[in-house]
Image 1 (spheres, rainbow over the protein chains, first blue to last red):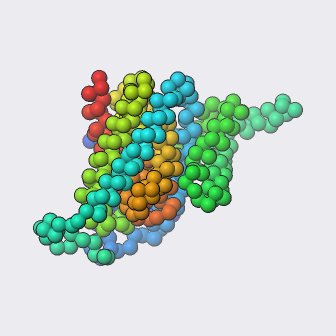
Image 2: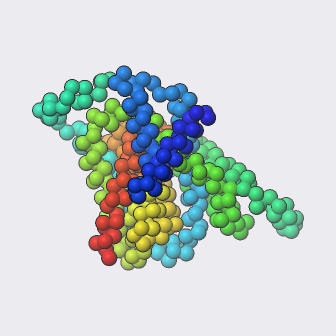
Image 3: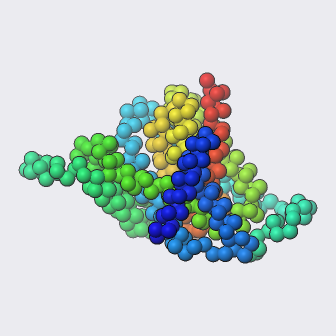
Length: 136
Length: 239
C-alpha cells in the first residue's frame, strides 16, 4: 500500500509542479492521472505486462469509495445557501436540463460513432498493430 | 436537559475526528440505503450523506468551517484518487485507442452542450450573469471548474456546489436515460458519465463496470481540458 500511495501522491506532486511551471489551467491531479496512465501504458508495452498488484489493489480500493470523497465539498452547499435561495429556479432548471442534455448528447454521439459502418480504406492507412486492439 | 447535552457536545465538537467520523458514517448509511433499494441510482449515497450532514450541521449550529476542519482529510484523498483513475484507463487502453475518433467527437459535442445549455437556460430564465458564469464550467471536475469560475468572474464556491449537484443528477438519471435510448454499451455510459457528471457519475458507473470506469476517467480528464479552454472564450463573448 505504501508503494501505491507513493506512486499516486508522487504523480500528483509532479502534476502540481508542472501546472505551476507551465501555467497550465489543468489541476495537478488531472495532469498526474494522464502522466500515470502514460507510464503504465509504456511500462506495459505491447505484451500488456500486468500492473503492479499493490498499485492496482490500492487504486481500485480508492476508486470504489470515490463517492465519499465528494461529500465534504458537497456539504459546502450550506455556505452558498443565500445565492441558491435567491436564484434557485434558474439554477435548478439549468442544472437538471443541461446535465441531462449533455449526458444524452455524449452517450448518443458515442453510440452513433461506434456503430457507424467502418471504412476499411481508413484503417488500411494505419501502420500495422495500431488499427485494432489485439484482444478482439 | 439541553444544557447537559450541550456540555457533553461542546468538548468534543472542536475535534476534527468527530466530523471525520460523521462523514464516513453518513456515507455508509447512504450506501446501506442504496443497497437496501437494490442498488438503484435514485438512492445516491453522496446525496444521502450530504443531506444527513447538512441536517446535523444546521441542528447543532455548526459552521461549515468547523466541519471542514475534520472533513478536509477525506477531501485530501480526492487528489490521489483522481490520479488512480489512470489504472482503469491504462488497463483498457486498447479500447480507448480503437475508439479515438468516436471519443473525440462525442466529447466535443457533450462538452459544448453542457457549457452552452447551462449558461443559456440561466440567462433565459432571468438569472444573473454571476450565476451564468458560475454554472458554465459545472460539468468539469471540481478543481478545474473552480479555477475556471474564478478566472472568468463567477463564484468558485457556488461552482463547486453546482458541480456536485450536477454530478448527482447525472449519477441518478444517466443510466436510465441512456438505457431508454437503447444505449447499453458501457463505453458510451462511461464517457457520458465522465463528461456530463464528473467524478460522482463516474463513481456510479465504476461501481458497475471496469470498462465504463476507464471511459469515465477519460471523459473527466478530457472534458476538464476542453472546459478550461472553451469557457474562458465564452466568457469573452458574454462580456
